[in-house]
Image (cartoon, rainbow, N blue to C red; front, side, top):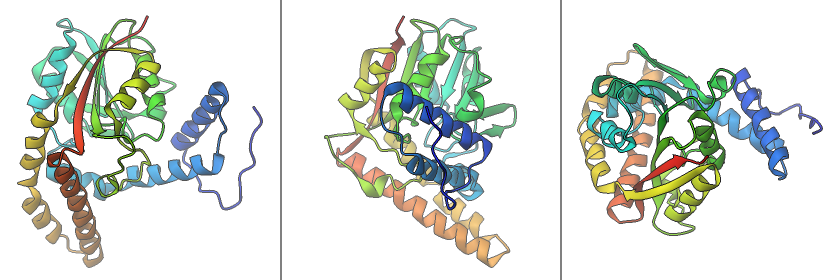
Length: 293
């Protein structure tokens, strides 16, 4: 696998992004498809900028609650955790753990030992979340008794690789639940709903299920969770006013203007998603699976 020359104006990547870049290049060589180095660098550069922007995290937590980067609450976390049917003191992994809130939910509702992973490392008091790339050389492969993945497949331009990463974390025949957005029909784009920097996109239910199965899981059940999820958006919507008032307290004029602009964009994104859900174009789906082997 020959190294590809890097152009002088190629975006600079930090060590985590460089590790991800090399991992994707190896995966392309292993799977036998063409590797576009420039495109991959651009994707990782944008993702790094988004992950490092505190404003996005501040806004998300102001709306959804401390440690949450997506709608959720303890009941939502436990709703899916119970489907795993694990023993009292199981070890589990949580992908898409946000800023640690799902780990806090599990600590309060179970006696499990849970480790969290996300696109950017965060820490909520005693619940640290490791970035995927930085965890690649540290994780105990095939050591967990089960796992959960919240809303991270649709964010990844190569969701099959993320599902494969999930499969490598758990024991053979371990239960794993993927909860994510899916679209109602093939080729539906819903561009206003997912104008995020990750370059991923929700896919139809069948297509998402196929890539999960190709990544090392057997699907036991597919459940439409849209009705249970929608109230979580409405619950967060009630906190928009407090988030706006928080922005107004910023003493620096430029910082206040930038925050309000980001808040408006974030509000528009979720308003579009909410409308798409109510119109039946977007849904939240849980894939109940087991690791093959």
